[in-house]
Length: 328
Figure 1 (cartoon, one colour):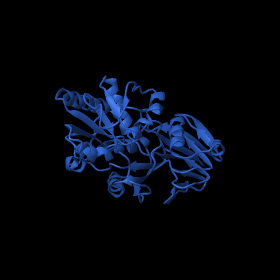
Figure 2 (cartoon, helix red, strand yellow):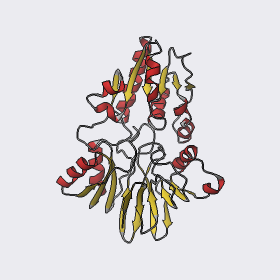
Figure 3 (tube, one colour):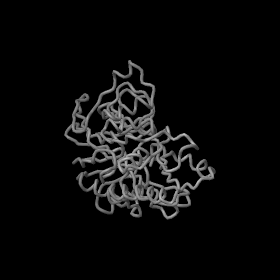
Figure 4 (tube, helix red, strand yellow):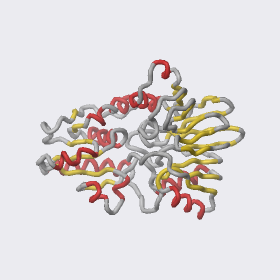
């Protein structure tokens, strides 16, 4: 199966399908709803129902364009010209999915952003046997090793409890879609009063509909009413929190928390290395379980990870990073 790696995304010319195209195209698969993957109005869009709901919140999809949205639930298969398309969970954010493309006797899997460990919120990844694997490698170096979701939940909750007992304000930074909702979910499941920044709160109903109950959170309206409550805000709030004059203690929940300079970079007191991307060993496991003869590595530490795969006897190559910095 032919593949064209372009600045606009990945194109499969044999069947006329794009993967995570950044600009409008005739037909596109959207792996998940982060803005670096779901950002244009296309003629036809394939994605999971959750991703389509989030995608429509991100872009201006009118009634005519909405007719071109094709939901593909996990495990469902649809014919697309001479090919068959099947969606499988990727455990990145709610709705994130891998795509299996079957064409002319070949099985191609595009993972999009993926992790192998179960997430705090989202379906568990299903590894898919294939001939050719296109794998994202955001954290494809041996130094990256992350907590599982239970460990991360305990660390999040305990940090909040410790701060509140000291009459301090626990603050967690989260991206508007993904990490923010997971932290809110962990806190509310533990019964901790939680204030949520509006950029994160707008996507909470989709998580609620997917079965992740964060009922009881309140909107964050600085600077009043924060005493005795945890804050979940976007990273851009750091300077405002630090200048508030309050005893605010910051926890950094991210794959980047595994770096030796993470405290200096984030300004955080507490580091929790939990990610919605796979760590080095998770990525190796995905490759091994796929049985793929060829692996194309996209995003992140592509050259290094591809070299490691070649040392393990695989036909692997690094692809020039096509998209903006991964959200984590």
